[in-house]
Image (cartoon, rainbow, N blue to C red; front, side, top):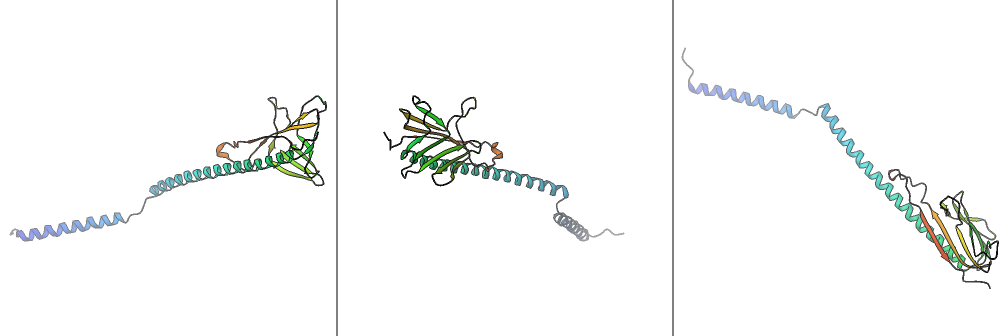
Length: 214
C-alpha cells in the first residue's frame, strides 16, 4: 500500500482543525447563551434588597428629622407671637389681679390673672395644666385657646409654681409681670429614630404696665 501524498495529509489536518474550531465556537456560543442560575439570581436579589432597605431607612430618617425641625421651629414662632401679644396687653392694662392676700406681700405667683385692657374690657389669662392649654377670655366672649402643649414651672419636688409672677407695690399697684411657660412641639411628630426626644421650648418674658393708676 502506497503512502498518502504529503499534500493530502495537509488537507486532512486542515479539515480536522476546522472541525475542531467549529465545535469550539459552537460550544462557546452555547455557553454565551446560557442564562443566570437560580443561586446567582437569589444573590442578586439579596444585594438589591439590602441596598433598597438602606436607602429607605436613610430617607425615613431624613423625613423624620425634617418634620421634627419644622414642628419645633413652628412652635417656637407661634409661642413667641403669643408671648408678644400677651405682654402687649399687659403693658396697656390696668386693674390687675389677683392681689396679694396680705398688703405687705409684694408678689403673687398664679396660673390665672385678670386685668382691664385699653378698651376697659376685662381680660383673663389662664393656664390649664391638666390639658396643657393657655386660654384667654375677653369680657363678653368665651375662652380662646392661645397655645397648646403648654406647661407651667415646677420646683425640684415637682410642686407647681405660678406661670404668672405678679410684682406689686403697696399691695395693689402692679409694677412688673413675668411669664414662665414651656411649650412642647406637636405631639404628632413621631421621631422614633431619635427616641421620641422632642426638645421643649421655654418661653420667658417680663413687662411692666404703662398705665399705672396711682
